Length: 302
Ligand SMILES: *Cc1c(COP(=O)(O)O)cnc(C)c1O
Image 1 (tube, helix red, strand yellow):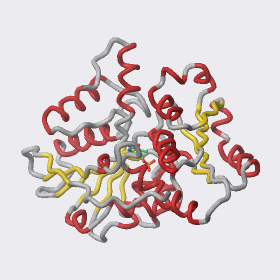
Image 2: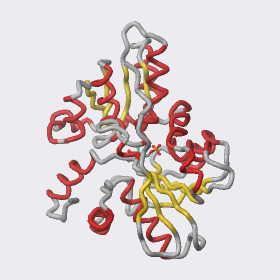
Image 3: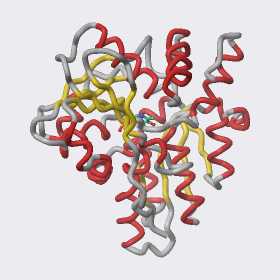
Image 4: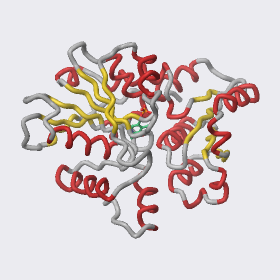
């Protein structure tokens, strides 16, 4: 079973902020209940091309951290298509604790087989990939975060006639595939801003290799580092949901949106700019984040 093009248009919602610019959000999080946001499009051509090749025994292998939206999405693809999946997860210590992790529990319930590896082994993913491809010659091995050429091609589907109207296109950046796709396929006059939640100096070069266009800027939005959640992030997300009715998660979209608000207040955007932020999904991560916050006796995400 192939992944389908959604029949409904993804809504673009105005965020009424009463400033000298106009802010909108494209609700890519609504594309699919389990394969959310940008992960749907990053997997779309990867999975469909693979299935069209008719492998005798289809098998999908991928990589991710303990709360990875990508692992969750691939496991859901496996459950919908009936294809067995294997997730290589960073952190050997999770071997006996995966039941306490909502993302890994979700993946398991979708039938994903999980293999836990040390951080050292995980860093050598290239070697691991080579080994796995020899072991399972027919398997589709999707890289971490799903970023490759086919993923970038899929991100094109997040753009349409309606998105051409905007001066700025904003997205959170992890591995860079999404911002690369937006940069590659947007209009000549549009500016792209990637909100970097990962501290990785090589990202700009990696993105450039995928888009070959120089229309994007990266802005650091780490708020203390990848996966770190500050009280101010929780407060922002909760306020945002209360005021505008849009849920954000604390790893990507919450940090992007908080930074966008800061930039608007600093006068970064010229007057009357029309800004479009992509809601790249990942809401499954809220449950896991709340478990950590609860352990630390801190305010939770509502
Ligand atoms: C994975 C993810 C991103 C980052 O996408 P990249 O293509 O890896 O840069 C952004 N937002 C959410 C919600 C994600 O799950």
